[in-house]
Image (tube, rainbow, N blue to C red):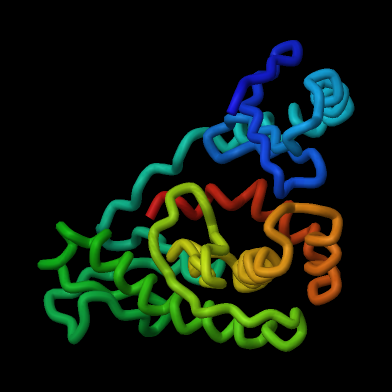
Length: 231
């Protein structure tokens, strides 16, 4: 890997023999990544960046407007917690039959567990994310003509999903916090990587064939995705 500086923009250049086109990524930390085939000269990389600079500035402005990572929730009565795009208030109960339960439009947690509330809430989210995401994958298998090895839900850091070796699909447990239609886009996006490792034009065409409004969903995720990260 090497670096490329174009005016006030600094890129980490990642070259790969498997790549056929140029692609710029603004990661969640605001770092700029330029992916390229191994033989592309720096002059062509600079020209590509200059053509894309307004898009890059727009993406950086969006990230700056959202600020840094959202503050974590406080496990007190009335605090709101997201689930499939809706916010549910927390009620701390003296006694409850589960560490976390969604009932009557509220999350309920025993007050004795509030001190370790995040641990219990994350476990609840993971338990719901696995079957929900797996069902969505199964919905699209035939339409996308793919055969994933399986689905795993875990903490992926700054990534919503990943297509791993052997055809395994990995998803961040926080995917279940997103609105259902946005979480569905995350699922389809990673499934498309089973056939197209990179974000080539064909990659996006594969998504569009099964999800006509994917660009709207993609843009929503780029702008609002970090809003759900403070659990």
